[in-house]
Amino acid sequence: MKEQQLTELIQPVIEDLGFVFWGLEYLPQKNNAILRVYIDHEQGVGVDDCATCSHEISGLLEVEDPIKSAYVLEVSSPGIDRVLFTRDQYAQYIGEKVQVKLAQPVAGARNIKGIIQSVSADEIVVANEVTEYGFAMSNVMKARLKPTTAGVKK
Image (cartoon, rainbow, N blue to C red; front, side, top):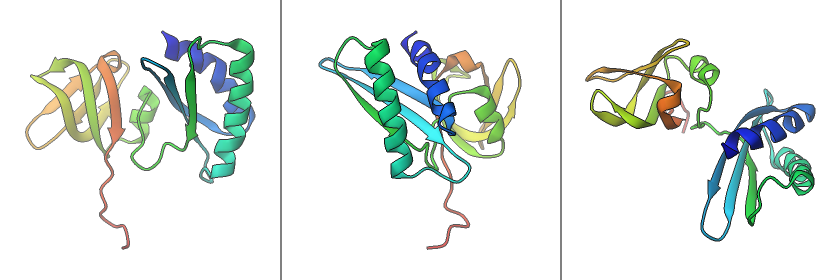
């Protein structure tokens, strides 16, 4: 899988620069591809941080050349509505609202919105007002936090 190969190349570079490698998305398209890399830091991530990481990643990709077609590199913070890539990231946000798109339906649903209830080696459980959904990490196509604006000052 291209994402795995790119992760193995890029993650050490991000971590050597002092950032957390949150994840990446590789989106091949007809004329070019998009490589979106998410970085995080306990003090937050600024534009200069993204530029520094982008510069380092670009240099690495030029040398290693894992993407044969034209591509656009985007480096950004995961943001408040962050995409979840790993089991540990789900575990970090137990009790938070999430939207999950599954490859295979669970309880008749492929698009699930609810609260992350639990995370184990075998299963992630998300519940809403109607029911509880348990699914394997391998069944997740995409998952994103859906933060509420409760408590946010306007």
